[in-house]
Length: 214
Image (cartoon, rainbow, N blue to C red; front, side):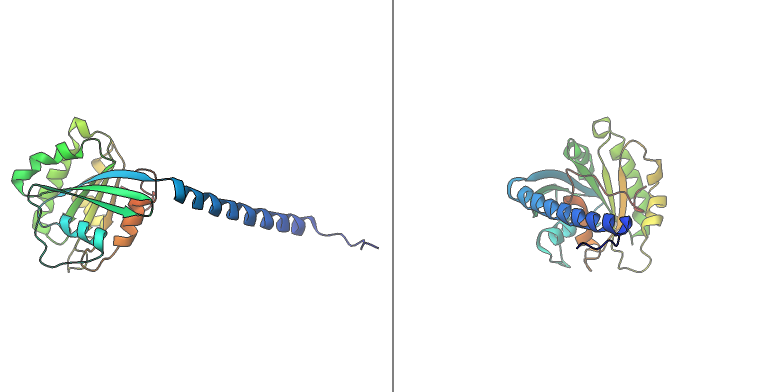
């Protein structure tokens, strides 16, 4: 004979909710697995910034996980493809010497995002870096393209943190696009894994909105 003791509604609902949540989680995992078999995304980024900011070093670390002290700066431009999961990232690395800066705008047209590198430990070049960034994104052809600002060499004494970079580069004045700022160290590989996941984890480039947003 069934017990006449009533089961509290809240407990029953909780049990059903838990079972449903488990089933939904399983379905989500299956869908993710199926997507991994058939879905592939290719995205295109352009990497710019003053010379010696660490652009080519970043590209090497992202591609191979290896840091080299005697990295030769890019002369002109270089292109590499990096694969992360099902995402293939085509990256244009453009030289940062003054004679190549006129090329930046051409290689930034139509990309998913512009990655702008700054040597956060070279305070004497911060003003020039700010001016070049604003000059670049003021180009009508680049209107609305998202910008990811990376302050490299955070491992060095006196390097600017994210808040200081936002202020020194006047990033708050940029209102016509999504812009995000991160502090990294290519040498120590600090925040590099997070950076690659940030870039590759979404359709095209939609940076996760957090405290690094300007």
